[in-house]
Image (cartoon, rainbow, N blue to C red):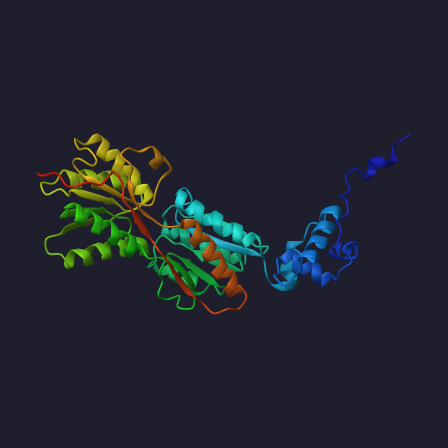
Length: 348
């Protein structure tokens, strides 16, 4: 005799509906919706009842249906230049943690420093109808990138970027000049009069601000000579430019590595050159890399709180989604002296 249950094996179990969750929790459907969306206007007692009902019934929100009904996808796009960079990973993690509390998912896309790929990512994010954008692009002046962003039609927060065409966007920025100025003042106090900055790309705000600050200091101190070599944010660039600077007759007595990725190349080149830190050259880094804890001498570092800018960027975007006006907030950078800096050699 055939087993009549065989015909039911392929049937999908029925998913509980939001109305059933509301009945189970003894609340209105609108209350369940507010809890699911992370709306702040919900009491702790109400939230607990609804979340318990969701767990007991195994309810899974139908995001597609919610999107059709509300026009919101509950997703935030984050096009960034290189997710392999630990700095960006920390920013994204901090932002994602903040956004999740309001029911939003973070959709990250890494361009690997390719502006054209970044434009394609922006198109895809628009096609997915994201509700807002966190933006940390590779090239702030890339025409198609700017065009895509100005036509996005959703709230935007610039994460340590400066795009003048987006005058209605919020921004979270670091005061890069403060930390770099403190580092240079420390080097000058030690007796250095020749400083080299192995800088990143001038198409983004952090590199421009660091170069500008260093040149402004030099313009006010006639006996201070500075050399700024710009390029990309890579260990290859760091190594190549360190070789070039340290093989010049007028080589600097102090070097500043313009990013954590550049630092890897700077350290690699210095290890192969007949120089010793800090005896022959003092070294300062902008940001840390995980291996820095094992580097000796301990590295003098220009620091910034990348997790805080991630949290702040998410908060600014949530505020914009709530209809609040755009804001620009600036976060500090600081300098921490260490053993990698000392007085310059008597002869160079």
